[in-house]
Length: 153
Image 1 (cartoon, rainbow, N blue to C red):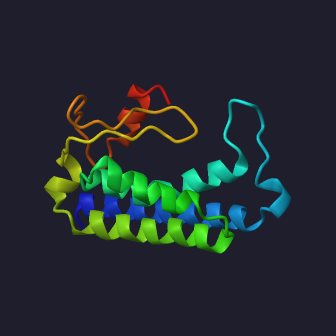
Image 2: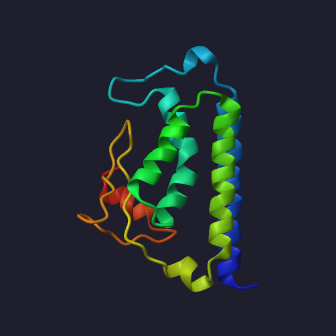
C-alpha cells in the first residue's frame, strides 16, 4: 500500500472519530444550556457548536476556492439552525464531502495543492479576514494549521 493512501485513510478515521465524539457531546446538550457563555469574551455553547459543525463544510469551500459570499451563506444557514440532529447532520455531511474531495485528489495534489484563499473571520471569535485580492495566501489540504497560527488563533 502506498504511504499517501495510508495517510489519507488514517486522516479519514481520525475525522470520523472527531465527528462521532462531537455528535455524542452535542446530543447531550440540554435546551437551557445553549446560551451558556463561560466569559463575556467567549462564544456561547450555541455559537461554539454552530462553529464546530460548520468547520468541515466551510473548510471544503475554502479548499475549493469558493468566494467569501458563498462561504458566508453557508455559515449563515448553519448559524440559523438550533436543532441538534440537524447540526450533527451538517457536520456529518460536511465531513463526508471533505473525505470524498480529498479521496479524489491525486497523491501530488493531496500533498502539495495550493490555492489563494484565506480563512474567513469567525463570526464570534478572531480569525483572518478572507480577502483574496488584498491578502492571498497559499493553502493546501493540510495548511489550515499554519493559517490558524498566522491568524493568532
